[in-house]
Each structure stands twice: as structure tokens, then as C-alpha cells.
Image 1 (cartoon, helix red, strand yellow):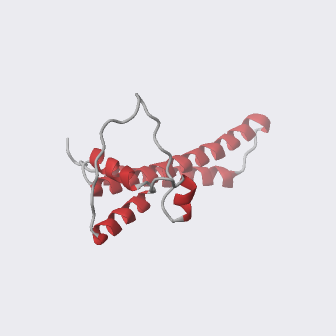
Image 2 (tube, rainbow, N blue to C red; image 1 turned 90 degrees about the horizontal axis):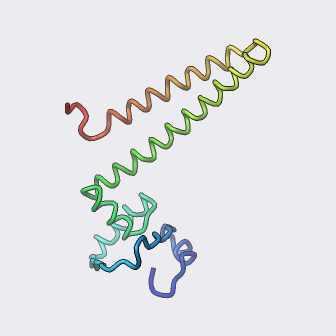
Image 3 (tube, one colour; image 1 turned 90 degrees about the vertical axis):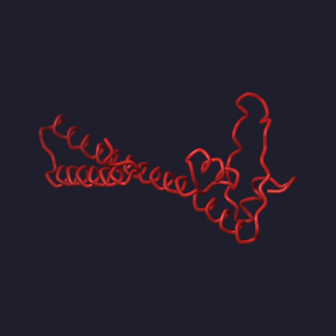
Length: 140
């Protein structure tokens, strides 16, 4: 964004909309200016868009993750773990419905219980896959 543009202008231009971080302890004192060739700019903006962050946000993530590749990998792992959490929440809700039915009238739907248990099993397998893909696996 250039001076005078609003965040709504950013969305209209296809740039990712991001919220500005609140000033923790006053204004930020330091800034960095990075110049890019057209090819470099295209790569950087594509990676930032893939992560759903601004270009400065991309550089910040890359710096704290150790590299641009690590920032992308962490973003993918983050998204995958959120998906696993959502699936576990759904499976727990289904199991709670079965328990409520059992506690209320002593009956339950076997298909619902089987489905819940299958969902738990597949979600745990997915979680194990994510955990196995993390860097440093096999190091003790």
C-alpha cells in the first residue's frame, strides 16, 4: 500500500488484507527498506499471498521462522493442525450426542457411534501424519 491508500483499497487491488499489529509499547523505532527486481518482487508477493499476509508480514514470519521456506512450511502445518482440531471437535460433538441419548433413554444409534469412532480414528491418523512431518522427527 502507498501513502493515502486504505486497507479496503488493498483488497480491491488483490493484495491480502491484514490487520496492522497494535503498538505494544509505542511506535516502532526501526524499519528496513528492501528493494527488489521485478522477478524478486513477483516471487515475494506470491509467497506472501500464499500465506495470506502482507509482504512485511511475510518477511517478519520468515525472519522468525529462520527462512522463507520454513515460514511457508510452518503456515502449512498451522493450517493442517487447525483442520485436525476442527475434526476432533466434530467427532467429540457426535460422541456427546450418543452419550446424551444413552443417558436419556438408554438407546443409541449404532451407525452414529461407529461413524464417530471412525472419525476419531482417521483424525488421529491425520494428526500423526502432521506430527511425523515436523522437522526434527527421529531425533532423541
